[in-house]
Image 1 (cartoon, one colour):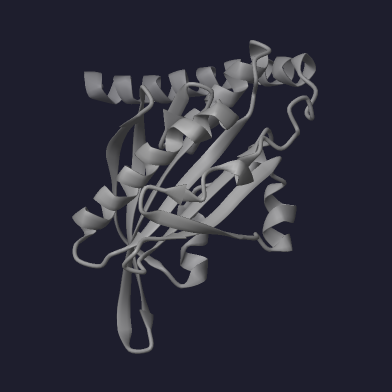
Image 2 (cartoon, rainbow, N blue to C red):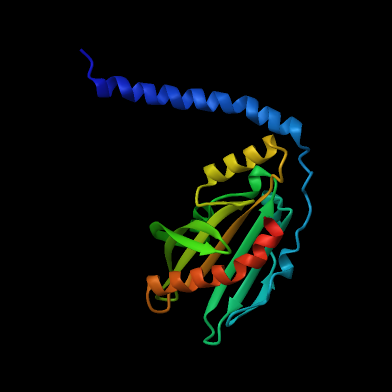
Length: 219
């Protein structure tokens, strides 16, 4: 006789398959309910404050290959610096296409960075509780080991999630409901000067300070 556990396991897979099949009509309905370029417009991300607390920022530009790959409606890549000269890398990629959003975990290794630890941390700003991914990353450079922390999440309207899958689901629901089906990847990178915990605290403090202005544009 088969055990109850052996019976339950295939049942779980069957439920997942059924749920996946049920999303197909929703995807088709979403495509019919909203033209792809309905919200394809910049939202003024470069107008975000260049002075955030003690940090002063200078804009950078994504390379053409990244722009062709992501096809964002708007983006901001800005390098901030505090009075000590410690940098803070701030990136927001905004758009309505599924291809616009990806996990930094895919591109960081391509830049020579190794992800040594992954976790999540809560951030609460402007009334929106955000759960953000945290990566501890490192690489060898001129005989030294450089360490940084990466915090990122995906935002859509009043939703914020560390999961790319949950983010895509939020975008799908917005399309079906004929709401603003746009979102953003928000990422902060801070070098580890003392400890990883201190670097994470710096990144969280920055996000809390800048998020109210960011939410006005992407919310």
